[in-house]
Length: 323
Ligand code: CAA
Image (cartoon, rainbow, N blue to C red; front, side, top):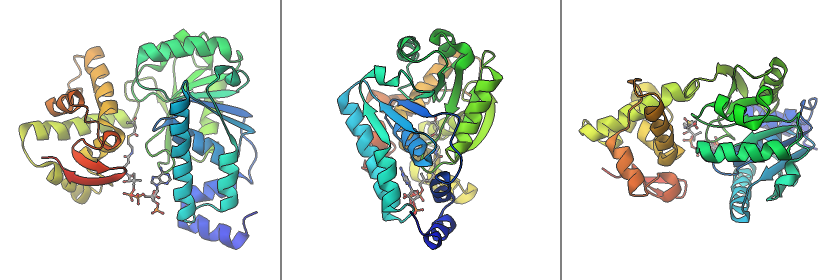
């Protein structure tokens, strides 16, 4: 039990913490059990936030291989340690969150989940195969939600065998900190499924917005082309990486400059998004592939996750720009 004086100071310190604390006092969500498939950069955060909300009896974290499951688990533990360190949660709360997640590499453990969030890599063939499998494993009334950044929700819904029970839920990195979730409906999504999902987004402490199944939804449709424009400036040598980032930070109040942010998101993710867009929408002038992005991908420099991108990285710590 967190003393109320402590609760107040936590609430004052950070709105997210308010949610961690309040969530335990509020009613439960429409979903008794939630499964998260894929524990990478986004999936581990979604899993953590769902567990932290205290709204579900069961939160199942699923990965196909033990090595990825362990990696996701240590990411969650690292994030919880950060929150604990900064006194945003109590040690009891940390224990409760960590103890409420069941880790599994057996997909039959997902059989009885009410709501399943998929956050695997942005490969449509892989996702289609996964949904075909999950469609046979999960109960028919379970809702499937993809956290894709840019792929068609409709394509996945149609392959899942339950198009009316299929939505998009798009979170932002770091999920533990970023307050938004975009909730996406297709022409097949039932109103009840959409409303329940929207409410779930709010239940786990996010601000939810609605969007149709359009490339990049709201945020990425605006954000990713602007990151590409920054990379085209690098291609043209208009300005240095450092100055481009500094300009957007200090001249436009962005928390991170665009090249720093691209490294932070992962250059592979940026590449997958833009590559899909340029293939599928060749006439859309906002969708362009900068040469420097392609070069970095070919060299295996994916930003923060590989220690090199537009910047040098030491874990989460950004170093010098690579001009
Ligand atoms: N878990 C828990 N807490 C975390 C965390 C994590 N994974 N990551 C950061 N935090 C906390 C830190 O502990 C810190 O807490 P305090 O305020 O108590 O110090 C706070 O968040 C801020 O972090 P930092 O001090 O390390 O650094 P910062 O002030 O520069 O903030 C940032 C970091 C929140 C990431 C900020 O720079 C930011 O908002 N950047 C932009 C991020 C963004 O645009 N994300 C969207 C990308 S697009 C996307 O994700 C969609 C897609 O499909 C590609």
